[in-house]
Image (tube, rainbow, N blue to C red; front, top):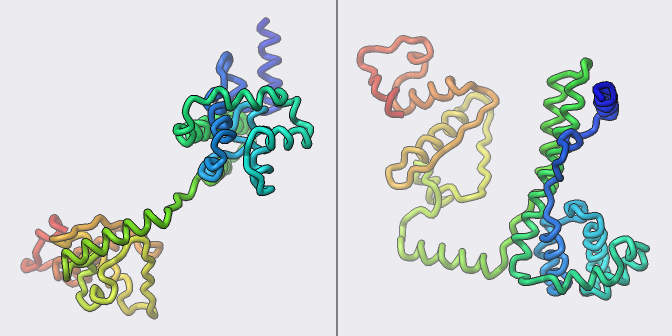
Length: 300
């Protein structure tokens, strides 16, 4: 018995099977009932397809028959035909997959088992979550198998792991669309707020009045580029903008600073120099005078 067990383990190592094969008695994450409910909802209410198409793809269903049925729905929709049971059955018949999925009876049965189509989107997200879990198990198993290899490069394995996990994130990320009605409502509310508060900035204050008059403060999703030749104060100006936004008494805003030229310590020395009105060379050289306000080191 021990010999046969060792042989099986050696075979698995050679084949590099995913970790899911090592977990005996464990069923991969799945939601068969929810898959049936979602497919049935799509057959009853075809308009749901556009809403769910960003969440669901054929491979995200666990049951093979459900993958084929959803793929048939995609083909029917792409052909400009309304998704309904007969059209899907015909598509499956033409692709010679109808009997594989369980015949016309199974497709029609999906519509009869739907209790409420209102939960279709919530069910679709659960199906997506189960798919992500299965993918993570597969990736983890592959990484485990590769990590056991003596010739494996550890840093290379880390890069591969990050790349594979990023691939899942990119596959399952969805774009949040806004309807014209939602946008109109948001714009009207914003206009009403500005009308009731004349003179107030709609964005984050920059600390520079002439600039605020032009931009009305930093606006959400704006990309502001500060461009100039070297050594004219671009970094100092950007730090002042960040500090002014963070320390504004009426609208303090959290700020994140990222630099590929300076370390965090160097950037913070500049902030202290500006905030405490202390020459930067005194801070970098440690030649602080008795007149310099050390309290600024604690209050910045």
